Image (spheres, rainbow, N blue to C red):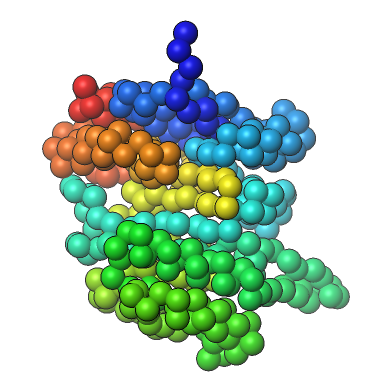
Length: 336
């Protein structure tokens, strides 16, 4: 038997994760991409089996295969185990979150012609979750910003903008108040910008950036942000084009890439065959491009656009009645 072209780690995740990952695997197979999937559990499913949310076997698999496709993993609010997503980013040094945001044909949204890229620093800042109780009733959270991490994410953002022919890079910050921490982030981005004079550069205070995004999103292109602002602003931008169910995401390091659904695990609709796999499929398209499978990526995106434009087969979150299975079959037919 001929060796298959790619061996990739598959992390189904929790809730609707196994359903949407199964759908995406079927579509990528229909596109003719040769993949051997190394399935690994994370989150609640892994904890039930091993007592760990991030088993060593999973981390070893991703390190070995270099690329993973990941469904959503549940994170308890205010209690229970820590975020699987944060743990995965730390363990694999996935320092950059890349989330393109653009309109899809036939998907209702308040804005048209949105075409943004969110580049989020992934390893530090308040989102790292470094906090402790000082005395009962008083909690301290640590906001750590380093020149090294800020420079690294700025370099990633400008390199991406140059490579993809983007119009400009905007640094988003709160350095008017947090003059040392966000000031260091801003100084680091400015230093990198001087090496990319061909890429226009500007800056926005985070609250003003949010206001302008919901007034005239077309004025932005690539946004580079510290971790917590990036988490918030990336979801805000998803809302511009229809929500988290229709945007992709990737967490990237120097050696490893994890492409994931950016929405939650939606346990309330798990195992009902109603979940929309579009977000993870878009992440899968990003993954194909990362692997050099550009033709397959284009054909899958064309098939998705065609099914959404026709409107006859839509999952209920997009106003239709189709099941996950029916939507997946429609995509596969469009690829035939």
